[in-house]
Length: 512
Image (tube, rainbow, N blue to C red):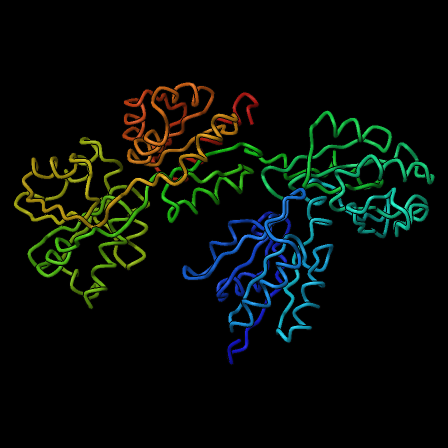
C-alpha cells in the first residue's frame, strides 16, 4: 500500500452509443491511471484514456468470464491500494443490475474511496431508440425493471409473477433472452393476456440494433426465427404498439450498413462521426499510421532559411500539422512566415491552415495537372522559390507542374505514412463472414496498404459483393490498378463529399 490515497470511480458507460455517456464520466476516464472495462462498455470510450493509462478488460459474456466478480473486486482494491485512480466502466448504469453496489461494498470494506457516476440504462434507452416509450399517459404511467437472468422455475424465486401479470406497468426485463420462454409462460399462466405486445431490442442504441416485435403468444417463435441472441432487453406492455409510429433510429438512411474506414486511426474521427450520425456501423481498419519523419533535418533546415522562399504550399492536413509542429518545436512562430504566399491542395487543407490564422492564396482542387495549372495561371510563379513540406513518398505532379511554370521547388519530408498491419486478421475474418457492406478509401496509400492485408489470390472473392468508395479520381485510379472497381467516387473530393456520395448511393432506388 502507498500513502497516496487511491480512488475508484464506478462509471455507468451507457447502453452502447458512446454519445450517451456523461461529461463527468469522460472527465474521470481522462484522468484515470487505470481503466477497467466490461463487455458492454463501448470500446470507443477508451480513446479518452491517457496514453500511459493501464487498460484492463474484465468482460463477462455468456458464461465466458475473463475474471470472476471476486477477482474484479480484488483488482479494483489492489489498484486503488497502490494510490492509483481507477475508472471502472460498467455497461448501462452501475446500480441497475450492474453489481456496482457489490463492488462499492467491497471497496468500502477495504477502506478504498469511491464515487458513483450514473449512466444511461438500456432499460429506457434501448426502447427509446426502438421507438418505444416506457411510459405514455394513454397506456401506462409506471414501469418495472426486472432481472431476466434469474431462472423463473427455481424454488424460492423472488419473481412476483402474479403481480407482474395483473399490472398495467411496462415490464422491462434485462438479460433475459435465454429465459424468454419461461418469462412468457409465467406471465401468461398468471393471467397476462396472450395478445399483450412484446419487443426484444438487441444491441440497443448502436448501429447493430435489431428489434423483434410480437405478442406473448408469438414472440418466442419470432425471436427464434430472427436468431436473436444476447445482449437484448425484453419490453412487455401496450407501449410496444407505438413502435410502428415512433420508430426513428432504424430509419436512418445508412442504418446498419457496415462500412470499413481505412484512414489512420488519428484521422478517422470525422468520417466515423459523419457516417455514424447517418446510422452506419463503422469498422475501423486503419491501414496506415501517420508519424513524424525519422529524420526531420530537411524541415528544420528549410525553416532556418525560410526567408529564401516566396511560397509555402501544403498538399494535406498532415503536411500542415507536422510543419507547424516542427516550427513551434524550434521555438519559432508564424511571424517568420509573414512574407510568404500560401497554397493548399483541397479545401480541408485550406481549413487546417486557417487554424493557424493563415489564409491560403491559391487553392488547386486536386493533384491533377490541369487543376494545378489553372490555380496558378493568374499568379506570377516564374523564378519564385517554393517550399513543399509533404509526405516522404508523394506524387510528383505538383512539383513537376510548378517547375514547368518556372518555379524552383524544394520538397522536404514533413511526415511519413507507414503500413499498419495490426488489423489484417480482423479484416479478413469480417470479409469471410460477409460482414462488410462497403470499404472507404481516402488516399492511394490506404488502397495499397489495404490490399497488402489480403491474399492477392483470395482478394477478388473476399471483395466480390463489397462496395468500393473512393474520395476522388487519383484514389480511384490506384484502386483500379489493384483490380478494384469503385462504385462510388466523391465529388467534391473531400470527406463530406465521400459521405454524401455514400448516402446518394444507398438512398437511390431504395437501397438504404
